[in-house]
Length: 326
Ligand code: AVJ
Image 1 (cartoon, rainbow, N blue to C red):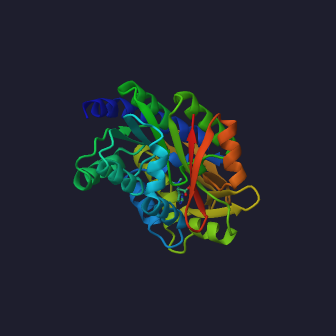
Image 2: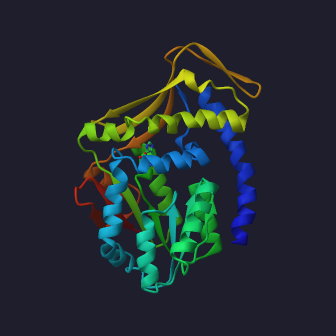
């Protein structure tokens, strides 16, 4: 708890420095881009919870199907670690899905500590409150910050065996090349016998995928536009949010589902003392939600030095939680 509070202060300042420099760098590039990891301020957290509850956003139900109905299979895979361990979740969010697994592990008196990692301190407080209420016996150490910094922090706090969870298709926020580098880096930070469980959203009917990211209520649009509002507030900028429009694409061949913001006119935006110029119809590249084939998942595990222990699919076979061993 104390470790977390000290860390929080240290990370907050590091955080806003890298936010400023990444935003300026991204908006000075051609094409312009912003990093989707910055979507998650308090409003962004709330909008993402609304996205997860939308009828079009099938991903949540798929992975809930696995965590609610196939918990025994998950526990069986985890029981390959027959000693005490840390259960580390990268990008835990509100931990809605993992809470089913946590409940069962606690009920079985498993000796483990839950370490949720998230870039949003706000959602971590929500998570901790929920857990204290619903699973009071759970040992929990929340870690606020970027994935690898906090994975190192977790190793610094404890040297037990690790089970690392990376759910919800979070891996989709990287293209396949970035995912390869990411998984190899996770592999380097783990020891023989540790486990890595990753959720992958499969390629499927392109209409189904596009609809999940191009909802008719416009929540995904607000989720994207909210980053401009956040930049206005935190970096003293003057984006006219009304002059940008969300545009979503899905390429069923590559599996890349991408969101953009389109500038609706020629305009100038000031960020502190920097001026950024937009042409009418110029784009900001906002987010990738990469979709995978079964072969992509197998290749990724192999290329990053893991072997696949087991795979648990949802009943529609739209999504897989693939469990990898070092
Ligand atoms: C949190 C990365 C899994 O890409 O599906 C949802 C984020 N963006 N709708 C995803 C998101 C637009 C989501 N992940």
